[in-house]
Length: 210
Image 1: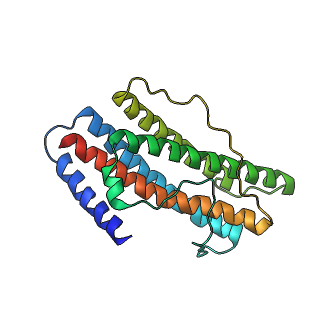
Image 2 (image 1 turned 180 degrees about the horizontal axis):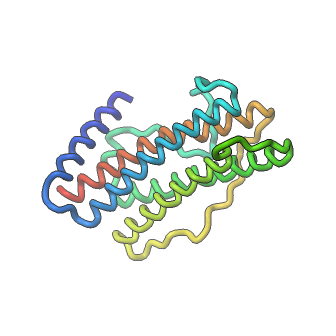
């Protein structure tokens, strides 16, 4: 983890340098915009995660790093292998990873909406958990659109899929608690993934200038 954070600090410094120089190429501006949206989305995910843990798990400090969901993208990556990825490979992986998270959020959102209807939950002031999840999905969709546009810039043959991939999660909840923890895992991993995605956009932005 230390290596990753050092790399992120280095890339942040590099991005600051390139932004202060000559006028930015259009493509670099797109990566910078994607980077900023990724950071904003990550902040919203962190806020939602705290809200989710409070309402669903009864503890804002709940942590469990041992559980994983098979339908979520793997987060572990060798740093040097990550550096060797081509720009196309990096964007292609980002698109499908975000699609996977979008699908899992959709599954959990519908599950929570169903529970609210079954238990006739009285909505408190402010957005409900399903509504907050929907806002995150919209952010992810915007990021996916940006990545798809960047991929089209590289390869005119690339066409964005017209609809989300159907989701049939392999992991089935055995108890109400397990179901609630699954939502935490999705948000936990999405928070970590968006940190990785921000690094991707930083690297791509710096390479368009070099």
